[in-house]
Length: 367
Image (cartoon, rainbow, N blue to C red):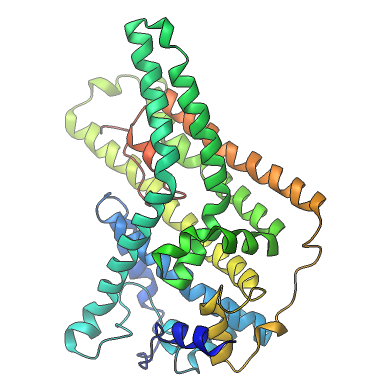
């Protein structure tokens, strides 16, 4: 690893020793995460928490790959290093700050870092997705406006905007999971837009990346169902619309909480899996392109060249097949979005999807 890349990476590493790990904090962290995800404003904290989780999981995966260890042993091995011991001892929302030694830093520094990570991730995802989400929203709006105003001469505007948005969405969505993992590891806003590095990472883990995309799209199905099903609530609860307002409100709250709990559980699994996929790919790239993973390897006294190499990475046939399949998989998410919007429209859902963006489920019942 070059000295310049190593020094730049280690300049961002935590160096203070952590408090003793306490798994008793994990359930409380999960409850806090779910409560924060119920509101679109506080959900930015959940996004930051997930970014911190991805960075930690990336470091653990690097230690496991290079040392040939299971996850628990990799955490212990990582905790033995001065630079990355705070990551190994991270326990979520109640973790002590890894950078401050004052009372405020020890008790609230970790929260401040989470806020910063959430804002940075929110801005990065918004900048990456807004070009296609704006087109999808504009295409939908133009279509409805044209229908209401009987402007048949402009009938092409809505479909044209929507088609352009879908094409752009498939390109962005194909790259976004690996880009988000790269951003989480490097903690640089520009990292999510380093297209050449992201494409190189995707080539290194071509089929695993495809599998994770399929998992994400399948995991999004219950979120779409939560938006669609309230439209048909009178079919299994006759007279629901005539119920007292407090009954409707209580039902709406329960309806909102259930998919939120599901979303948090799914996102924790997906983000951890994406981080592990990223770690495997990053170790195969030069240190100047993925300095965080190489800094972890250096701290462990290992060389990234010892990492197992993926098989059959090259060849245009495999690249073409996996590329087509990846686009087809992400088209499934776009199809879900259109079906859900036709059933129960909410303009916000064009701008954000909780599986890929802000982890907040729009409240479709009683909103």
